[in-house]
Image 1: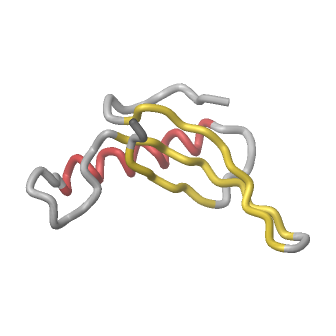
Image 2 (image 1 turned 180 degrees about the horizontal axis):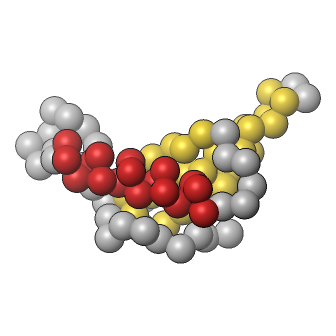
Length: 76
């Protein structure tokens, strides 16, 4: 299920389950087109922080209890 996007650089989002024995964690995955590697020439720490802040805000709009947020690069 894709959630409403709260930032122009969030391409899409979805939920994943992480299962460890009887434990289950719900993960909100955020796909972004922002460069995530600090060593890259076009890395922008402030923009990455905006994406992180938007991901946290999105998490708060979801009625399910989210255990983690994972931000991943866009997959082409």
